[in-house]
Amino acid sequence: MTGVWLALAVALAGGVGAASRMVLDGAVKGRVRLPYPLGTTVINVTGSLVLGFVTAIASGLGPWAIVLGTGLLGGYTTFSTASYETVRLAQAGRWRAALTNAFGMLLVALAAAWLGLWLGGLTAR
Amino acid sequence: MTSAAHSRPLHLRWSSIGLVVAGGFIGTLARYLLSLALPEWGGMPWPIFLINIVGAFTLGWLLESLALRGPDLGARRAVRLWVGTGMLGGFTTYSTFAVGTDGLFVTGDVVPGIVYAVATVVVGAAASIAGIALGSRGRR
Image (cartoon, rainbow over all chains, first blue to last red; front, top):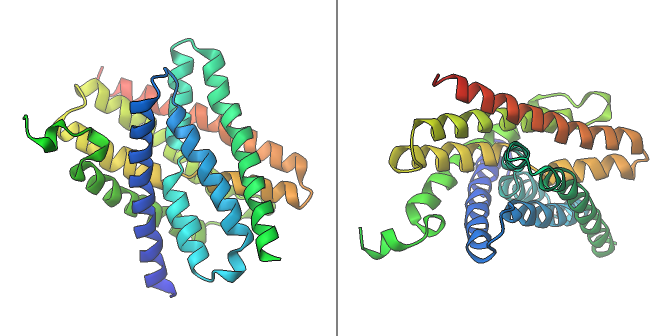
């Protein structure tokens, strides 16, 4: 799978990832009645964990590493919404929530990606 | 309006899912092609940085423009799901950003990694603010 077919597979996986993000975010909003955008954090942290794992085992996956990583997980996680929600919290005067959404999400996602890379490294060994 | 399809929450309707899949397809394809085309100068993943900043700006502009035009219904809601949640959500990425930052840490580039991560979050927030400001100016 190369060239145009790989690009189409990546794009289709991205579409599926984006729809999964909407469904999961909606489910979190429906269950957790918090005035905080928790859904995006859950999505970005779980996506970073799985991408770390996929990246560590990429050599055994061939082109599927790109379909899963760039496509599915790239489309599932999102930066634009996270940034927008941070700014909306700040504009509402909720500075602590805004800082948590910006830098708390960053730290937890970095730790999750690190854990994924480590777990994948154990598997690939 | 009392049919099962309309009482179902928005995020579980097939129409919403179709719009977001179609948008995510385009946004992800654009990110994939751009990340292949743009150079990674200085050993830093700048293509993903640029993609995330441009996406944050555009989403701010879009959501503010739509909100000022009226309630989140009908065509406005379809555009929000297709372009906002799908296209721009799929164009930008957090997982590649996080793994890319950890990649800098792994190779011992701790300071560049911190600079890259903080710059993405701070410049991204500035881009969101600028996009929202542009969106609100368009209607006044």
